[in-house]
Length: 275
Ligand SMILES: NC(=O)C1=CN([C@@H]2O[C@H](COP(=O)(O)OP(=O)(O)OC[C@H]3O[C@@H](n4cnc5c(N)ncnc54)[C@H](OP(=O)(O)O)[C@@H]3O)[C@@H](O)[C@H]2O)C=CC1
Ligand SMILES: O=C(O)[C@@H]1CCC=N1
Image (cartoon, rainbow, N blue to C red; front, side):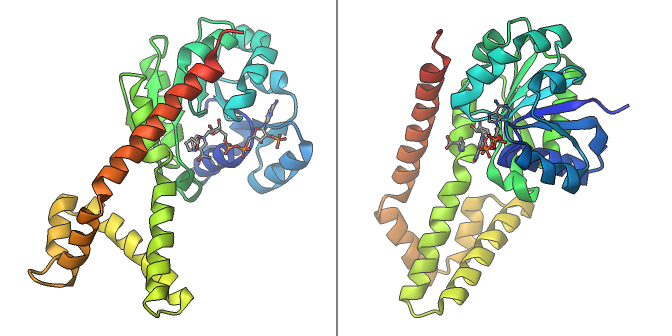
C-alpha cells in the first residue's frame, strides 16, 4: 500500500510535487494537503482528487510522511502548533523550506524525528526540477528511498552528506532558475535592439537556452568543449565569448552564488533562533 503523504501548505512547491507524484502514478487518495484558506483547497480536490483540509493536526494523524511546504517565516508557528500530533505519529518529516536546519525543525516539532531537508526549484512545476536532499541520522534507508521517489516525480534528485552543502545547492539550483530567467531577458532584449521583432527575439532566445541545456545533458562532451564547438576560429561566437570573459561574467557568477549562500546562512540564523 502507498505511503500516506501529507503536505502542510498547498502553494507552488507543494502542488508541483504532489502534481508530479500523481502524474507519475502515485495514488491521489494517499495524498493530503493543507492550507489556511479552504478556497485554495477546493480546486485542488477537484483537479487532483487529493484529500485537502485546513486542519493540520487531522492531516498529520495518519501520515507516514509530512512535507513541510509553508514559507520559512511562518514555519515555527505551524510546527509548534502541530507538535503533539507529530509526536503521536512520528512520521518522516520532509522540509522544502529555505534556510531552516533539520535540527531547528526537529526542535520545533518536539524532537526525536527523522528529518529530510530538501531544496527544490520552481521548474518542478513542469516536471524538470532539481532538488538537493539531506537526511539527519534518524532517517532509515527505506525513508531515503521513499523521499527520492517522491522528489524524482518532479525532476532530478541529488543527495548531500553535509547539511551545509544545501547552501551551495540553493546557490546553484534552488535560486538558479532566476539566473537563467535573467539571461533570457537580457538575450531577448539584446535581440530586439539588433532589430528582431519582440516575439521572435523571445522564441529564439528560449529555444536556444532549451536546446543548449538538452544538448549539454545528452552530450558525451563537457560544456567547455560544447562551447568550443560553436566557436569557429576567427568567427562570430569567439568575439561574443571574448566580450563575456572581458566583462567578468565568471566573477559575476562567483559573486552572486557566494551572496546567495551567505543569505541562506543568515536566514538559518535569523529564523532558527531559539525563542
Ligand atoms: N519558490 C521557490 O523558488 C522555492 C521555494 N522553496 C520553499 O518552498 C516553501 C513554500 O514556498 P511556495 O510554495 O513558493 O509558497 P506559497 O506561498 O505558494 O505556499 C505557501 C502555502 O502555505 C500555506 N500556509 C500558510 N500558513 C499555513 C498554515 N498555518 N497551515 C497550513 N498551510 C499554511 C498557504 O496557504 P494559504 O494560501 O491558505 O495561506 C500556501 O498554500 C517555502 O518554505 C520556500 O522556502 C524552496 C525552493 C524554491
Ligand atoms: O529566494 C528564496 O529565498 C527561495 C529559496 C530558493 C528559491 N527561492
